[in-house]
Length: 410
Image (cartoon, rainbow, N blue to C red):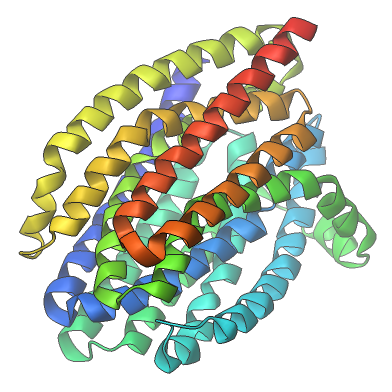
């Protein structure tokens, strides 16, 4: 089990750090060659697209894995997950394009007019994520890593090309979207190698009932994930309304680095979750989650210290990035909290406490939104970073409390 956990976590880390490394390279050249103003506008678009990524996640993979007793049932669920995500993607794209038209302030006419192009990446991310449901179930994340590597190379290559010959917002958004398209194609091709027959897929297409049933079963999980992304992304959206593009760009750059560092607990739980759902592991679940939480807490403290020390290095990207450096240092203080949130949340979900977790995350999203609406207009990016830590602290305390209550009842 330990070998599987290590191998599949490492596979996800390779994919993330390869993709994130190339993203940081493109970010560096975007800021250097196109300026913070253009990068700030690009950040406005990519943040909303990221909200769409989370909205279509909808907990479908987790529900499919939780509901499958064997490979045959999981294959059926994969077909349903793919179709459900296509449906959700089209719905979310329509909603987000209406939302961005209504946003005031820094969301210029150019940002609004090109957002539709960026939002197409939501469909492609959905196809990639759907393929991951099978790779997660089979613990074969290296196939998912191949898709990320190829897609990231295409997206990075196109971005650097456009920065050299036509550094405009529409072309940078196009490069990002084409990178996700490539990633989706690779994921589906790798998936098709394991799914030799399309007969079941045709049968699933013939009726919407099983797809709608899957969406209904995963509704609570989906709302949890949406509430969590609102709690983590609403600050950048509010910042984009009230502050200048240059400030949004500096905050977006700092948070992009922070996002990369946050992936470890997510990837660990992507492997721990299907293992803990196996019948043979049920009685060891509490011990497994406890050990995982303690280990991630220690790692989080160590990584937070490194981030605090190294945060001034962002000035190497471009002189005068002091705001990004300060934001990173503030965010680093909350990093250990982020590292223990994932195992605490998935532990409660594994015990079918979905509605309880949803209530916690909705409360966190409301708290974060109100704090940012109150403080960002006056204090900007620094307030957004502080509010991130306060919100995560609230989530950890709530999850710890209810985890303890559940343990006592058992």
